[in-house]
Length: 332
Image (cartoon, rainbow, N blue to C red):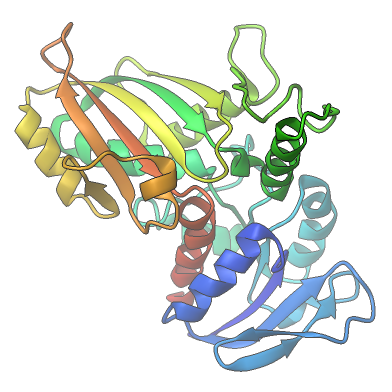
C-alpha cells in the first residue's frame, strides 16, 4: 500500500535525515506533503525523483494524508496533533509530547511492531526516545536468551538529544570560549561546552530526573519488567552526535563471555566490535547499527556482565525509527 504522507518538520536536523533515509528506502509514497509553519511558500521538496510543493500546516487538510509525521516542538504538536487526528489521519509524533503518556503507544521497530494496528484505531503513535531504542535492542536478545534479573545503565548522551538547539548551543559556546569570550547560559541549566551535566531534565524528589524515568517507563512497556528492576542514570556530555551506554546486567541463567558476545553480535541491528578503539566520533556517527564493545564478566557476580554500546542517536535512534514505523503502516 502506497502511503499519502504529510511531514511537518522536514527541514529540522532529524527531518533532513528522515528524508534522506526515506528516499533510499523501498517504501512507496503516493503523495508527499511537506508542511511549513509559514504561509505562501513557493518552494518544493524533492523526494523519490519528484518535487513536492510546500504547504502551510495551518491550512492543510490532513484528510488527504494517511499518516502525518510531526518532527517539531511539544507546543506545536499539542496544537496540531488534535487537528490531524480529527481528520482521520494517523499521527506519528516525535516531539516527546506523549513521552510520559501510558495511553499512547510507543513503537521500537522490530520489537513491538504489533502496536501499529492499535495505533491505526487510536490514530496516534509516539516515537520512542533514542536511548529507549538503543537499550531495548541491546537488552532484548539477552532477556530472550538468558533472562535479565536486573540491569544498571549509565547513559552518556550527546547534545543532539536536544535537537538543533543542543548542537547550535555547543558550537556557539565552544567558539566563544576558544576565543576567550564570555558566554551567556540561557537555554540550558549550565554551560554545555567543555562541561558535563549530571542530570538532563528536572530532578524529582527521589533524585532521579524526568528523562531517566521516561526511559525506564518506555523500556518496561516494550520489554516488560525485569525481576529486580533496572536503574538508569543519564549524563549530558559535550559531544555533538552519538549516545554511549555503560551497561551492567545480571542474568537469570549462566552464560560465558563468549556466549554473550555471540548473542549480541548476531542480534539484528547490533554489531560487535572488539578489535578496534570505538568512540562516538570515529564509529557511532552515521553508523547503521548499534555498536557493542568491551564485553566482560563482572568481578562481583558470576552471572553479571558489563559492556559498552554506542549509537548515532539522530540518524538511527530517530530518523531511521520514523522510516521503519512508516513501513508498518505501509503493510496495513
